[in-house]
Image: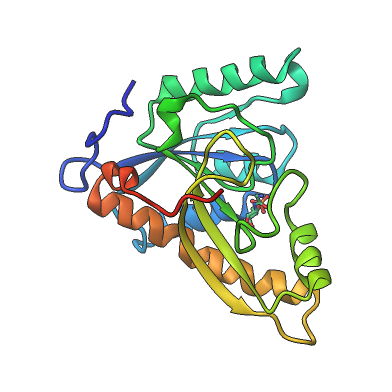
Length: 218
Ligand code: GAR
């Protein structure tokens, strides 16, 4: 497997990603666009794994010519077996970095992937995260709580959902007239820049950049 430290450097070859999705693939679409138009350089998407079959993200990846593997939890007797299937698929592709992009199943990732797997969440973690917190629900919770600001968080993935050291955040003020739609639109705009900027940094610095000490949350 190819996840050894210092395997990639932008000078020698592109950083190879596998993107994990469960739905519309909006984050995936953004990454594809940016690689295509040269705003994300030295990065290649070598595969997509989807936890659902009939979702727009699968079609999007196929149209972009990216190999897609559908691995559905419901096809496995236990979540551990499903996680092993995801791991086996990743081991075949041997990416430098695994990118969760609206992936809503809990992959029990082996230790060797923990410093090599990123997720983006549409709120300022550690607040408003955890199981069941995705999409509009997150923004509704932020508004209900009267939070003065929201944003998005890129973090390293560990064995706990929406947990793991925070790599980067982008913020926006919550305004009195915000609805979950208006807040979602602003947060998504932040996401479109934040995730690619983190990936560009890793591509430029090499994957060992992910081994540095990020803030660890309790
Ligand atoms: C992204 O906005 C991301 O923040 C969110 O899913 C969206 C992408 O999904 N992820 C989470 O909420 C993770 N807890 P999509 O590609 O299906 O639109």
